[in-house]
Image 1 (cartoon, protein in one colour):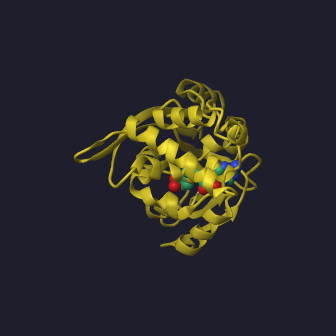
Image 2: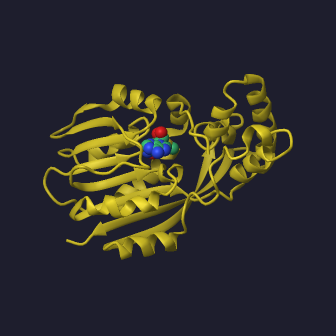
Image 3: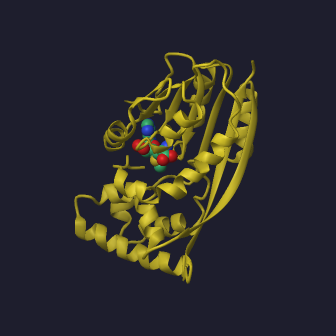
Amino acid sequence: MTTPRWDPAQYLRHAGHRARPFADLLARIPALPGDRPRIADLGCGPGNVTALLAGRWPTARITGYDNSPEMLDKAHVDHEGPTAGGRLDFAHADLRTWAPTEPYDLIVSNATLQWVPGHADRFPDWIAALTPGGTLAFQVPDNIDAPLHALMRDLAATPRWRDRLAGVLRRTDSVATPGAYLDLLTRLGCTADVWQTTYFHVLGGEDPVLDWVKGTGLRPALTALADDPRARDAFLTEYRDLLREAYPSAPYGTVLPFRRLFAVAVKGA
Ligand SMILES: C[S@@+](CC[C@H](N)C(=O)[O-])C[C@H]1O[C@@H](n2cnc3c(N)ncnc32)[C@H](O)[C@@H]1O
């Protein structure tokens, strides 16, 4: 997979829809140990969902970690600073190697771990860093077989594009099964709650599914074609036509079914 270059403005165009699973994840996280919890948000992006953590735990010290300079710049400008009784800040980290250097009461990650190959191998270190009764909670898209990804993969594999895009897109095994996460987290000494939800996002505007994917799943292809705008635009046109057929518009908008996987693992006290 090509390391994608992120575009916070494009990503935030669907911020309302994208934040909803985070709210659903947050609702299942139990009370944290300690009055002034220490929280890490892994893959914080532009920081808008990290800021929701400060709303739930106003006295917490919260750090959002990310490896995209573009996303971190946006997070610094929009969200860094004191909260009610705590603090929200942002720092560079690569989650493939990030090792906690202090105890955390909550390690949370939204819509990120699918971009981190081998993320489940990091769980033992992350859980070891949790305080007793602390929580590891994450949400990942679980829709790699959905038309928006399958059509992207199929198009990238055609003779016209395969020389430019072979091996560029996210792998189909980037997310494990719900049962595999449940088994692993339980074996690591946690009480785990794992579930899936399919959202039926009703999107407005022209070609809204393309617009959605340009903020996320298409980033590796857009990054790989960035030095050739004509090729990038040709790829986008072909992909857009496929998406129009797969996601027809209705009088009330375009429906994007989107399955997501959630896990909340509480470490034994
Ligand atoms: C889809 S965005 C999610 C952002 C935010 N958590 C949210 O829910 O809006 C994925 C984020 O993961 C970050 N990311 C991907 N791979 C990473 C890695 N290896 N280390 C750190 N951050 C990574 C990206 O830079 C991007 O900001």
